[in-house]
Structure formats: C-alpha cells, structure tokens
Length: 375
Ligand SMILES: C[S@@+](CC[C@H](N)C(=O)[O-])C[C@H]1O[C@@H](n2cnc3c(N)ncnc32)[C@H](O)[C@@H]1O
Image (cartoon, helix red, strand yellow):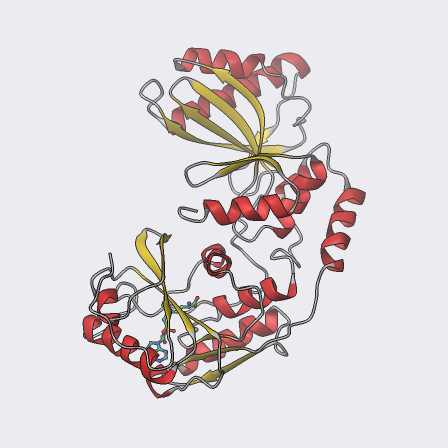
C-alpha cells in the first residue's frame, strides 16, 4: 500500500526475510517456504504475497504465448485443479492486460491438452490457483498468489460503519507511529473500532490472520501441513497480554454497537473498552497517552462546515488532552490546516483512492497555537 513500504520492509526484516527491497506499493524479498507461511500469517501491512515462478522477455503477444507454452506448468497445477489468471501491464508493447492474461491462459491450457490430453478449468471466483502476470515493457513475470483472499480481510470484521478504514492501513499507521503497547491508546472517533482491534493485536503480538482458514498456498502442490502448523504454533507462542488500556468512543450509538461486535469477534472484549461519547465533551484522563483519529473527511461522511470542524478538533486537543501525542489522518488537506497546531511528524498515505495526510501533534500541557505551517 502506498506509503507503507517502509513499515512492511521492517515487518519482513523482523520475520527473517532477506534481500528486502522497497518498490512502489510493494516490497520484494526472498525466503523459504516457512517464511512464506509466516509472512501470510503474521504480516500486518501486506495485502497479498506473490511467489515468482518464471521470468522472461516478450515483445508481443505471440512471444508471450510462446514463452508461456514453453514453461513447465505441471509442478504447479494438474488437470483436476482450477485456476485464474490476472495481469497488470505497464508497457507500450502489451497494451491490454486482459488480452495478455488470455494469451497465458491459452498457452497453459494448450500445454496440458497437448501433453496430457486433459486440461485444468478456469474458475475466476474461487480458483485453486491464482496466477498473476506482471509485464513492464518486455519484462514478463509469472507469479503465484500465495494469499488467496486479500490479507486486509481479518476475521474480526463483523460489520462496517459508513467510512471504515482499511485494516492494513490502520495497522500500518499504528506501526508508523511507533506505538507498541507501552502507553494507553484512545480513538475518540472509533467508528467500527479498526484502530482499537489492530492496536490490541499489535500490543499482544496476535497474528492478524489468526482464525483464517484458507490461504492460497494451501492449494499448492507442495503444501506442507506440518510446517504450516509449526509456523502457527511458533506465532502463537509469542502472544502476550495487554499492559495498557485501549479505549474507543464515538458519537454514534450504531458505530459503538458495531465496534463492540467487531471487538467481540476478535475476542478482545476484556482488552478494549468502547463508549458512546461526543469527542468535544471528552477529556483526557491519562498523563501521557496516544490518541489516534480518523475523523470524517466530508467525502463518504458529510460534515456541515469542515473547516470549522477541524478547527474545533485542534482546539479540543489543546484544551482536553495535554500530555498526549495525537495522530490524525485526513484527506482534507485544507481543513486539516485549521487544526492550528504544528505537526511534529508527517506522512503521506492513501485511504483507498483518497490522498491523505497523517500528522502527529505533540500536545504539551499549555500548548500554544502556532500559526499554521502545514504542508
Ligand atoms: C471516518 S469514521 C471512522 C471510521 C473508523 N476509523 C473505522 O475504521 O471504522 C468517523 C467517525 O467519527 C464519528 N464522529 C463524528 N463526529 C464525532 C464527534 N463529534 N464525536 C465522536 N465521534 C464522532 C462518526 O460517527 C464516525 O464513526
């Protein structure tokens, strides 16, 4: 995800990946099969993990078909299994991604038919094997999707509010902030509770995919169930209890109800407290704590006077939360300036298609408002 590459690189380093390289919206690395399982189970900021199986050059569709036909598909697929191919093309030589994917599909099917007399079928919805074709100019890569369903899908997501934050983005933001569970965390506009659950999972070392039953690699010919069990056991052995309060609140009774359901699904009712409250009548009760907030942007969630709303947020930070470190994400680049405090850290992220700022404000007791100097 754009802006989270450094966090993902750090996560990969922590699980023992090698040759880690930060790319655009992706990170490449090497590792063995255990690492692939571990990556899928424990990485909080990856959406999908691909394993490259073949690289070649092709300048046109004919060459693409030829190279894909020459590649031995048998180690990865048999005629009884289903597959799907999708493609991302960034090339003047191959302009249509769907057509490129179709060429590789034809080559694969023709190879099985010619060699074995039977061919695997295509299932776009729920295939055994998801194949990904990536083309940059004449450089083609064939990769297998080891994750299956996107890894932003966590088991706890029971219901959504109007504008929920993506789980991977929420986890990435908490990791970017450096919070690891050493001081209380509050989200006073918690919606469905995504920050709260992701924070509790980070602090407790709970794998983000705990509870998920299916991963793409389980359908692979070389799937090793014993190794998979071992990887899970090792991850579970690192779990710990929570030492600090994690508290959410929201003005909407419906959001509070949804957050509570999600928290219950995550089996974290004892770790996280949620209450209905207007942020503007809330008061910070801790001497030092982290506040993280994803207020409405007036995009999916309308706000009458967005500039005034953000100004009031800034005023309330200053009055009610001295000693806190407050983090705020918003796509409202102009309105966010009305917070009127100078950010001490700044990140540039994307919340879906929306370009966002993610700012940290240090709220010292008696913080004076600065002239706005946000970028
Ligand atoms: C963009 S949503 C937050 C989504 C949340 N991060 C999630 O993942 O579900 C903004 C939330 O702010 C809440 N909100 C708006 N004004 C508020 C206020 N004055 N006090 C507390 N919550 C407020 C809304 O009810 C909504 O749930």
